[in-house]
Structures are given as structure tokens and as C-alpha cells.
Image 1 (cartoon, rainbow, N blue to C red):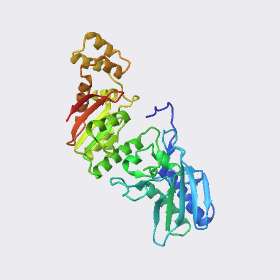
Image 2: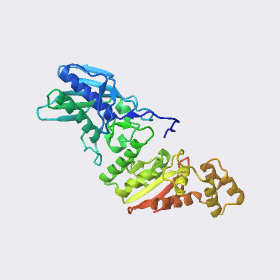
Image 3: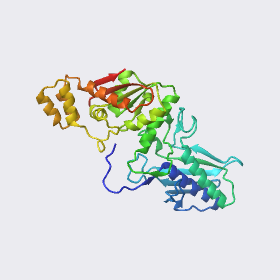
Image 4: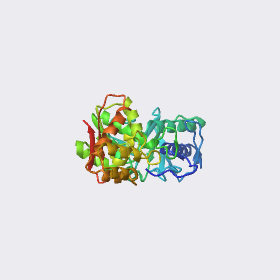
Length: 359
């Protein structure tokens, strides 16, 4: 995860808000022959942002408009993406229908907010788009019987850097956003993806999932337990957020897998493992080494170690990894109200298992 910069950060707009703005501009052009530029929309909490148009195309029976997504100061993979909406007249009584164009994914697995076979345009953006088109229709004494095609020309490439392939969303990005606003470094998209990963696993009958802090621990836990890719949730630093969701959406079995440093912080009671928000307590780590029988010079070295990995090397042979796994497991059990079978796997930087506790 990128480090949060200092100072006041600029907010941005979700793909859903951009799609709604592009759709509103296109529909207005289809009815009047003119594109509003910039185009203003009303978001669920009352904000009324305006968006300049990056593309405007008026055809005989359709109109297209595009907005460039501005994620503000958030490190969003879709920052700068071109969000295109093409609006054409539909059959009388059809209402607003949604279709995925190039670069917008198609849902193929159950458990997501839209059913398999549908374009990955989430419910909240659909509501916002429908509201904006209804406003335009009402202004011109029309009924919004229209087909809306949302495209993201570079979306397939961008989607490879998201959870979409693992979630069974193929061919491109999802059009997302509940409020329409991107709060920099709120990590809401990541936490939302954790929830979706759990939902898809449950809906597809996976009974053993693993929460991994990164790619190295993901590979290790898949080897250790023989798990399929869809069973592993990239929880990153947000172990607390994952556990909170699992309490209300439980699975029979859970493995927590992570590097030694991050799981040391978990063992010491931290639920957010990001380096900006939690630190390894080396005094506590030295005390643990002492309890395992480390010699006094080693204990002193652990206390002043530069990194947790250095401390692990200093105490080689004393099963410090197993002790961290056991303590981390106790921390997690203290946060789980659901009845879930639990084990913890600790790996080093090379991906080798150095600790394990639980079933």
C-alpha cells in the first residue's frame, strides 16, 4: 500500500459518478442535439460536482460522452481512466437498461452485488445513472426508455491490477461507488474487495478461506493447505476489517497467513498492520525470546534490532515463529465471535514457513 502523503488531500470521484455524468451528458445531447459541458450531477449526499467532457459523439440514434476519472490524491488504479457512456433509445416501457462495453467486466460467479451474466456495474451506480437520466427525461417531458452502454477503453488492462479476475469478473473493470466520492487513503475499495472475496467464496461453496497479508504469504498458504486461488483473500493490513465481516458472514475454517513482522504486530494486539498505524514492540519481542530460552546477549540484540526479520534470524532455532503464530491466533480468537476453526501461518521474506499454530 502506498504511503499517505502529508497535508490536506484532494478528494476524487468514483467510476460510478463519472459514468453517471457521461450518461447524463449523452442523453441530453440525444434529446437536444447539444452536450452540456461541463455536466453537473447530484450525488447521494447532496454534492453537485461538475465534470468536463473528454469526448462527445452525436449519431442519428445515439450519443456518447466520456469523462476522465479523477481519483484526487488517492492511489487508485483507475485514476485517469476514460469512462464512456453511450445512450440510445430503447423499446417503449423498457426503462433504463445497462450494458457493458469494452473494458467493463462481466460477472461470472455468484455472491456479488449483481448476478452472473450481468455487466459489472454495481447497484449504487445503476441507481445514480437512472436518477440522472430520469431528471433529463423529466425536463423534456420524456420517459427514460434508454439503453446505456458503459465502456472503459483501457479497462481490461487495469482490471489485471484489481481483484476482479479472482472474483470471477472477466474482461474488465467494475463500475463502483456508493457515495460517488473517493476519500484519499480511506482504503474503502480494498475493504470492499475483502468483503466481496468472502461473499464469492461462501456463495461458491468454499469452506476454508485464508486471509493473506501479501503475495508471498498467499503463495505459502496455498502450498501449505492446497487452497485454490478463490479461497485466498488479500486482506493486506486490514485483518480487523476482515474479522469484523467474518463475524457476520462466517466460514467453517480460516487461516491467517502473513510475514513475520506483520504477524508480530498482530500477536501484540494490533488489528491494522500498516507501518503508519502500528509498530513492532521490540521490548515485547525480546521478552518473548527470553521466555523461549534465548541467551542474554541474544535478548539484548533482539531488543535493539532494526527489523523484525533481523530479530527472527537472531533467535533461529528457538521456534520464535511458532510462538508468534500462537500469540497471533489468540489475538484473532479474541476478536472472532463466530465459531470458526482457526490456524495461523507465519512466513519469512523468502516465503518459507517459520511458524504455525492451530489446526
